[in-house]
Length: 172
Image 1: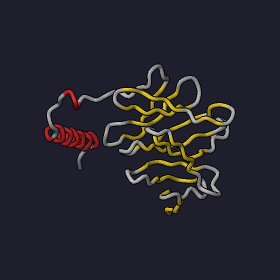
Image 2: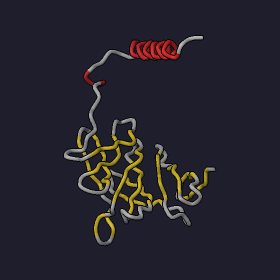
Image 3: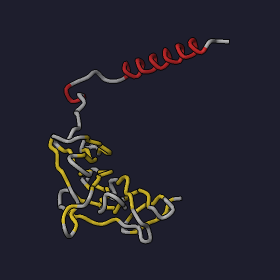
Image 4: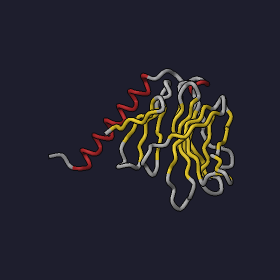
């Protein structure tokens, strides 16, 4: 019977070999392959959540309080805070982006009781649409495909949903 240290040593060696093998299969680095740090300027913390095929990145960052949504595109950062009748929401988060620049995410009104309200934003036109599942306390869009279909979860039994053509369909 092999000792624990021997087994661990062989496992780590196998992992190192697999990683080396993957690196050898990758094309050599060029300037275009250099990773781009995603760090919203002056933020306390930046959390990228999705990327489309064009390299646009969405997520959220913290800067003195609740989360603020961002889009990183063509080397520039764009911030977005959902506006309520009397000022900004307590927080806004972008969770997905497709190649047409449609973004999905959510905002919440109250930092103490952060019920999420879904949204879809077409960045190029500024068109903003609510995504709310009737009967649910909160709606959490998670991703959007190139057809504009959105998947996520709602607090109504924490069921998954597909939002397509303005219609919610449960995913159990």
